[in-house]
Length: 239
Image 1: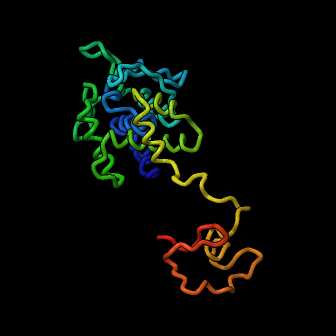
Image 2 (image 1 turned 135 degrees about the vertical axis):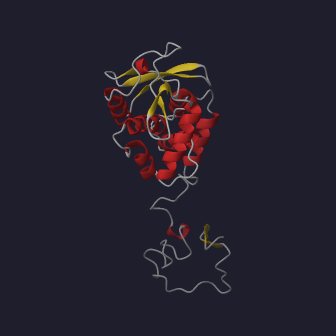
Image 3 (image 1 turned 120 degrees about the vertical axis):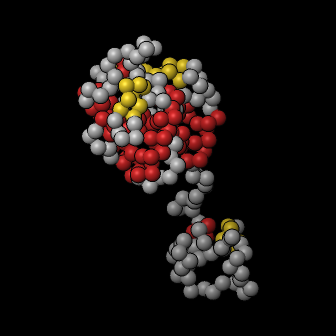
């Protein structure tokens, strides 16, 4: 739920591990990153002044830039200012954004791994009542929420594709289609014939507006489970 997602992003203690976890969950839930993209992030990838970060998407072999949400920017700023984020290059010459953690809550000197992040996300999910939560579930939540924006006309399908790092429109289209109201645009307007709404006419089964207030009995042999046609409109209870 939205409340659970909010708790996953903001409900962490002010410990090194807690601040690291806030960064992880914000990047997964607010930006829809894949776990493989997450662990490749480096400290220099973040431009705090511009409020953006650049990252590599191995699946589509593409470098993208995202504008940070206010929540993500706050989590990143807190993490970097805490002194717990790596500041020196590792053996591979990288300065990873995230550090791994041990069972006791202390952080390792090494960068986070996909397996480590996945196990941590599962544990954090369990704490808010979501069993078996995975990084991909977080991406699915992100895409579902953004798909609703597209369905409402607040964003385009191509914007969703770009933001999610998909190579084609197939996946983003699924999220948009799932968010749509199937009978949108098919409901009658208020000024349409009242008989469209129900057999009585006013949507409450109490008779047509300005007619007989529902005093007329149904036709002889009326079956409530069969459609009945009045004045060229389909009415009655259809199952």
